Length: 208
Image (cartoon, rainbow, N blue to C red):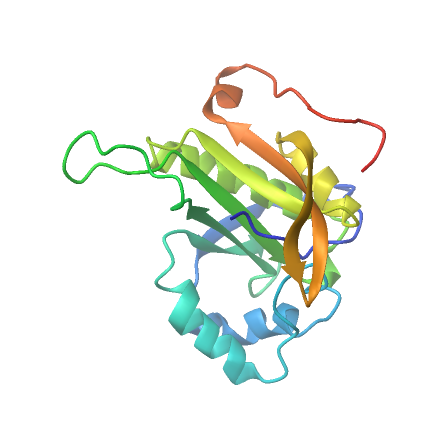
């Protein structure tokens, strides 16, 4: 299932600082805790804000490091990561395996979160673009990269649109978020989009 996102502030790309992605290490615990403990950042995520740095350390060790594609978002001039972005292959609709060892899926989902101090600078948009380009290049089997955003998280919806994702429609009562059923907006990029074919929006264009 695609993930929700922690970036509910407008993205205007007013500062074009270079954004790069790299793998996490346990040394990034304090930086990870800085945004994972902020209620504003985790508002649209399933988990609550962390209250102790050890929660961030355990998450990095148990979840981030073994993850197939989980990266720290870094900004030129910052001395530590300012967010995280992850891409997870789908495992619920496997394809027939054509040969031993071949991938059994064709799609993946992306999720991200950015520290509050870096909202509104275009950081999330550039990180999503970079992640999409990277996974399409690294995973030849990947045909579709998808993402969902809460219907109230208009900023994340704009981020995905500016990153080249097409809005496909609203999934009603799709996610339980902190005990409440939520409607989500589905977005996608497909491999054809990288080959010069512009994404087409689906569903109503006058709001959600």
